[in-house]
Length: 206
Image 1 (cartoon, rainbow, N blue to C red):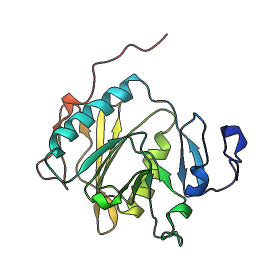
Image 2 (cartoon, rainbow, N blue to C red):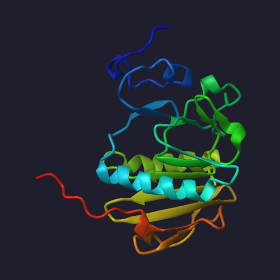
Image 3 (cartoon, one colour):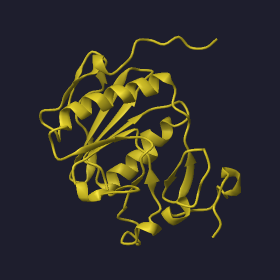
């Protein structure tokens, strides 16, 4: 099969697998959600600052632990219970790039990324991707067995924290604002003061 060098070469009404994904060599970033292609919006300055701040705080926490933290772009292949071809990773049809993730089962980490659910996933909402994080990826992360999921809203300056309980996500608390301390449920000693995460207001272009 030939290498794909342009997103325009792909049929967006068709479903694809990880084997297809590995043939794509174009500059646009995309994810595969149950085989469907989802183009990713370029992150803005606020998004990048929040990601950088979280990554520094997470690294400081896990640096002496048997876990690793990764920031996008980093491929995570999710084996879903409804997918009958989970045993063949090339045929997996869900490949996501979380803004940040923490993985403590190091056997899941491969040269090309992660195969399996991270312990913690953090997604930072972008104007073009909000529905994906709030609904589609929420359902995928829940089904795949992500233990804790944080959804960060830069505009509202808050964080929603979901914890996997009996196979379903449940709110760990009320929405946390930039004046709160986020206490992880799966990492008991991980407490993040959100004033350290959200940047000062950045002037928007006129």
